[in-house]
Length: 350
Image (cartoon, rainbow, N blue to C red; front, side, top):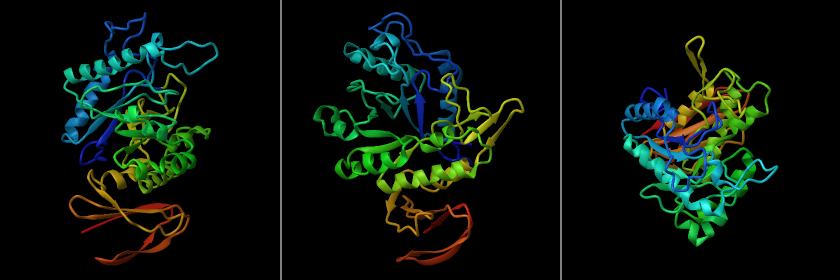
């Protein structure tokens, strides 16, 4: 459903290093007593039973077009500063190097299983980033609440290829924190690695909302805003969750693009799944964004020139009514069409 030509043709995927919010329990690859040499580092049963087999299947289905990046949600507790009353605990400074070595161990162990990673992030939502340094031929993606400071610093910038963005406070993040980065640092890319359809779900009593067009519309609008400020890739937080929005040991039950009903041995593709297809299937890797004027704030539009010289125009109609529009390409002519109420439309032409 996600990686083949018959599916969404995903070409970018995030892999948790150890547990994430959506694991059944918290764990790292070196729990227990202090182990600065990482002699007890081991991949978990979850890696061998689930992650590695599914990643290999995804790589096979995508014909090698899938790029993977890894993020660690939590570090071993013995690496952290323990402060009473503090929920988020920072790394001890003397653990910066063991933490960097932890990343290298992870990459080496997965390489032994035949899986290579395109990139890593310095951590999932850290309050302060560990200094990862160089870990070989892999892209380093910093996650920080001070992105501009990170890129302005000559030392850290040497190790940073891009920025990973979470946008739960969408307008603030996009307009004020990120819009200047592509202009000031054109050599550094931005990826959106968690997104507001999750935050939208948190504010609703019904966290799993089967058949919800609105959740997909929020995400589609978010993708289009990202594109317009120069963000080059996006991943959703989860690819599949159960009917309760889990599993999650952290109590973070949410909506997802696919909802699984294990009792009935069924899964349900949500409207957001098909809305994402307008981007993932029609805007292949290597496409270049081209200028497009929007009709109004309720009818956003983005356009791309594809590597095969085709042109893609994606239009979202957030209105509860039919909207007539004209798409004008000065080199090819014009097309008039009516956008159905609450719809997304993609035009592809050469």
